[in-house]
Amino acid sequence: MAVVVLLAPGGAFADDYWQCVPFARLMSGIQIFGDAWTWWSQAAGRYATGYVPKTGAVLCFRPNGKMRLGHVAVVSQVLTDRVIQITHANWSLIDGDRGHVERNVTVVDVSPRGDWSLVKVWNDPSRNLGSTTYPTYGFIYQDPAAAATAKIAAAKDAAIAMAQSAASQVVDAVRPGSAPMQMLNQAADSTDRIAALIQAATSGDQHPQAQAAAPAPVQAKPAAPAAQQPATAAH
Image (tube, rainbow, N blue to C red; front, side, top):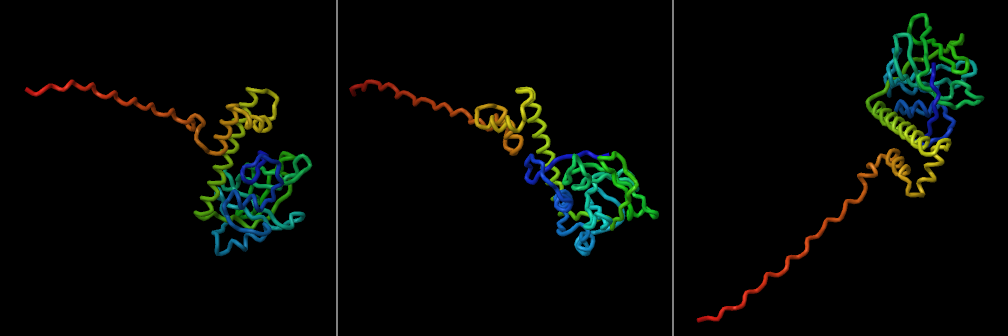
């Protein structure tokens, strides 16, 4: 099975068209450019490669049929030695369009030798694996730098999703039926507390209450001068 999500560069909430290559590069941290089928040869001498799935690795598909430029997908989970889940872009035709991102898509190794050289991929519109098989080169593994980059991207994605979910819940409670982001944009020009909360959640700033200016310290009044005693005449 698969979960379809919409992502946008920099955390924007937009229905962007994603190609598989820039999406795989963003999510894996593996800095390879060019058509998907060239990733395998480009990885030589730069990244470790192999035929055993690992979380965070990129599965590199060979050109095949209409998929003449190949395909790349990021391994999101390893379920068994023959079943994994991937997160990738621009695979299924969904609602008449391509360019969608699909999370945790099931992929099954059907190669005779169990080396992941031939796979079946879950197709969301048909809701099954189907009969089509896809040849692959193998897996390109992350190095420490790529893994760190991917963790940052994943953390940012999770934070944005959490903020958007919180925004939707707050808006539904305050003004049912309103479009969350539209209402929040309107609230940003007012003193509405919702705008402050969402701004803090999405920008990573301090909680609005923590940003409130502390009350100015009360200055102590200067002490009154001591009363002077009348001078005593010398005897």
